[in-house]
Each structure stands twice: as structure tokens, then as C-alpha cells.
Length: 159
Image 1 (tube, rainbow, N blue to C red):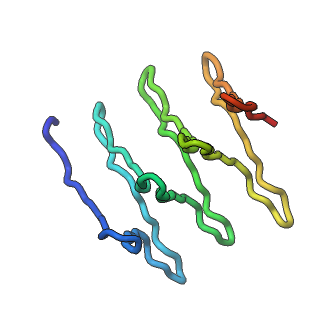
Image 2: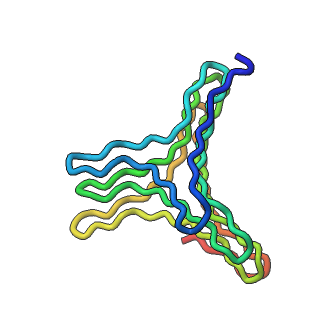
């Protein structure tokens, strides 16, 4: 349906350090509501919209904003799930998941780290960390773990 488009919604604050935009459900003693951020579905052959969550960049010497995503704490902690979309077409590819730390280019700078760790337990069993590749009809996926090469120093280690 060429030329058909929906409207846009923009929520923004004024300038300054204290300019904040909050989107949340109300707190309540009987439970709070959910907040959903997403794009709409599309018909066959059309693309649905992307969802992007990003902080602003800063100029040299400034600190860019952080992005924090977490499940809530409580009697049973909230689950945080990252997953790529499934694909159902012939010769199609499912959506991937990419987690990478930021690079650094200034003299004496260090690249960001990626940490993966399971939860600790004060009186039970600690959480597990699992890394696995997908099964396939023709062949299964691979798991690769490697360290970074050092251009003028030693390479990283895998342990």
C-alpha cells in the first residue's frame, strides 16, 4: 500500500542536566501495571518498525549517558531476556543477538569490557552460565571463544 504511513509521537524534555523524561506505570500496594515499548506488526512482505533505545553522545572530554536495563528485585527477581526474532520463511535467517563493548581510540585509552556472570546465593546454589550453539538439520552452530591480540604488547588470555 504505497504512500500509507502512520503518525509520529515525540516525547522530549527541555535542555539541561535536570531535564528528565519518565515513562512508567504507577506504584501501588496491589501491584503496578506494565510498560510496553514496541513497534507495530506489519502485513506479509512489509517491514515492521525498529525499536531503538540509546543515550546521547557527548563531545570530547564529556561523559556520554549510560543505558541500564534490569529486572526488578523482590521475592522472585524479575527476568531479563534478550532474544533475536524468529524467522519462518524459506531460506530465511533468524534475528541475531549482539553484545559488544565500546572501543577507545585516544592515546592510553582502554576498550570497554563485557562481563557475563551468574547470580550468587547466600544459602543455596549459585546461578549457572551456559553458552551453547543452536542445533541444525544440516549442521549445528559453532561456539568460539578467543582473546584479543595486542598490537604492541601481549595478547589477552582465555581461562
